[in-house]
Length: 343
Image (tube, rainbow, N blue to C red):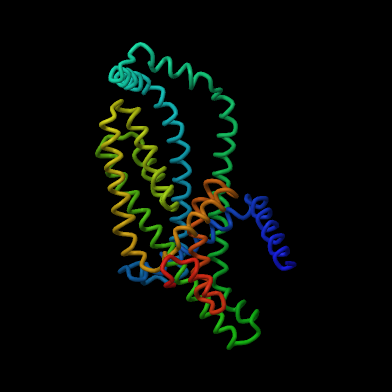
């Protein structure tokens, strides 16, 4: 009874610390995940003809610079496109009015629902100015978090070289240090491969989605494709939400249900192709979480940290399972958390 009480108290205290320490822990964890992806990418570059001849530190530095540039471009893309989407929505009023009128005609209630009536009953009742300040603060916080992620990732990459010597000293001997380093190497390799492959899959999905949106003439195609790629880190829910936004925009842009249906069908085919065909073949056993564990992780981390927690929930949980599977005493826990029991 006493142990159960202590465990409950410890869990509550850890949850409270995670919630309070979100501003500090979130960029640190995101940077650690980024370092795994970047390190695996740098190691994979060894197979390239010219770049592969460079020493590892040079490849890591080059890919870190590319990562920093991509983060800056991402921030610029988000800021510019959010403003443009907000402006474009005002020009879609005539399309929405025509859509509502046609729908009302089909239902036999032409005199009642018009876009003016709907807007007066919904949007005009909302004080958009009251949302402006929180939105600007959230964007500023988003930029600060991205900066900290790049900064922390730089220091993590620089510290990796001295980590082996620290482990040997900490374990108290060469033999114990070699065993610890071997275990860490296996854990790092599996986590790195999982995160790298997952990121590659998301990039593939983003590229396919961008091509679809571009061919269909959807505005802000690059922005929606990047959003779809990021949300694909969230299983089940992320793919659904990622498709909804461009579908709603196509509905406002063209004012026809048929075009929205085409966008929905094409993006869904892309999601199914990547999720059901490519991912099982590329991921192998690196992603082997029980669906219940995935949903539980999403519920826990999204409750604590919101959307960033949902994005990081599965990578963090999958990494934890990989760590537990490499340690003999905790391997049974990893087996219970997995989908098939093979870890």
